[in-house]
Image (cartoon, rainbow, N blue to C red; front, side):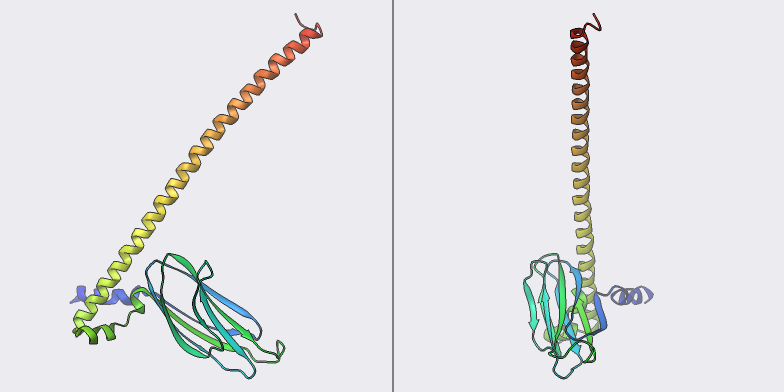
Amino acid sequence: CSRFAALLLLPVLIESVFSISFFLPVNTRKCLREEIHKDVLVTGEYEISEQANTKTNLKITDSSSHTLYSKEDATKGKFAFTTEDYDMFEACFESKSPMGTGRVPDQLVNLDMKHGVEAKNYEEIAKVEKLKPLEVELRRLEDLSESIVNDFAYMKKREEEMRDTNESTNTRVLYFSIFSMCCLIGLATWQVFYLRRFFKAKKLIE
């Protein structure tokens, strides 16, 4: 029982949840960024306090400026998308109002984002596939394990890429050092022969 209880605690200890609240001044833009792996489901829910004569736009993009979600005059809603590649994603809130800054109260923005295991609706999966509570939890643990394996695989890949980059850099530095030494030796040799000829021409040496 204790081992199973520990397994049940794993999803609670390792959650992919991003939740934040902040105030958005009028006629300003605030962006939040997060790195997410490839082929990961991302869901979110937002709520923005309403202010008279003020519209707030929400736009979610990737590093290539591809729009994944966009909503004008956003007040409350949900969004979902699946990442196509490991990338940096940006959620931007922009407040627009004909009133000047300081004449309209700041808007309160609440944003909850989930990705990976936490973004899946296991209650809906249980209804569709008619799973028992224990089977649902096992499915959740299976997805969590797969997510952890993928994270380790990605970190291993990044480590290999960094090692290859370091080895390539070290090799280039070594070749450059050898080339520099050869140039210095060649320059020193040329200087010796040049000075020798110069002194001979001036009959300072035999």
